[in-house]
Length: 382
Image (cartoon, rainbow, N blue to C red):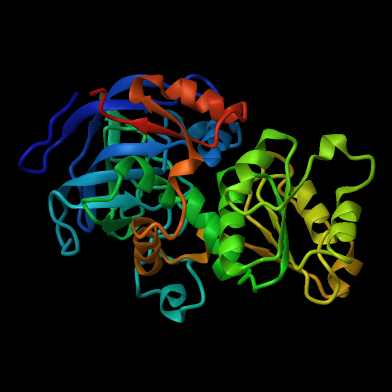
């Protein structure tokens, strides 16, 4: 296990490196460069496994982006800061965020979007600032993931892709707010703006879907229908607000017809949280005419194109996309952290497994086989 240094210099530490799509990660000794201007280097304390980590790890769409270090839901402690960083100091507790907020671009100043033009979703495996990597093995570059790469004992992120949190926060639970939980709550509150007494249907009851349910429950939805092929999700979902449950494997008629019968013509809101574009069409058809709103959150493995009959939209339904629940990381995430600290939102019950870093492949397989909600990886073996 590496120990922090007093001045910015190259650090050698352990990282779980993916050498090829879908192949087991290998714990390697990697070199982590010191932070460049406007960057911080973080000692990762905990990182949770998100389904998008698994999707991208298995994907063969970008085979040239290997070797690579995945992971993006993480909590940690600032180890060193780069030139120009004034917001963070060594020792600060932080959450990493896979999109940033520069505060000056068209989207950031609009107040209407979280799609920062300078620090948006990074797809090239490089740092935003100089389009280079901060990781290497024997002098050869190792690619980043979402400009975070938290499957490493130390990582470097842009200072606007991190949020300072209280040192009293539970680092092994708060990391879920880096992506999944925030995405679900934001989809319910910011993107859909669920109203009291409304009806909701959620396709997929993983961490994101259950977080949508929690958001709908807090908003006072009268009926929250969960759709999932795993019957165990119903019992789990009740605590998060699920009032009714549909298992597609046990249905003899289309899901949208069942939802319409349960909601007097269609739900006010539907959410696609599976990552299956075919389900987007089903979710749209499950909404009511006139004002039915469908929000899609899942990241598809295959067939990224969405198709729907024009009449579905002509009847007044709306389809909206959602990235990170519409939250602006620097402006909005601290509010969610406060809600967690004040016990206004539930996060802890979404963690089904806690594992040491050495068992990260087991955690990935649990997610791949849909046998968990969130596995939290503790980077220290102690």
